[in-house]
Image 1 (cartoon, one colour):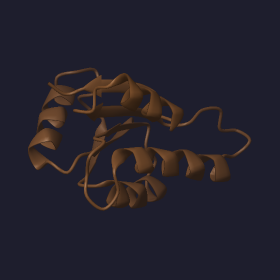
Image 2: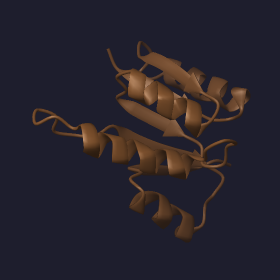
Image 3: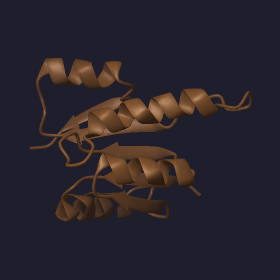
Length: 115
């Protein structure tokens, strides 16, 4: 079963993302939620996660720092049989090319700008 970690400080945004996923090929995925990067990192280390959908601007730990720490953890714990890292999609209001570049350089795979 696919496991998706939704990270956003807005419970409404997490609910909207869940609703969209429930109408997609990921409708049967296990969906985990975290209100900030700090809690999300704890969950990531404790659970098997296939996809992360994360906001950038959050309290305690922002999405960019979270993505960097996920990549750092994966690099340290990668087994010889593991051939790929978790996919990280940043969903944020930060839409400048500088922010997109910064996110990609930090290990984010895809970038979606919120309206």
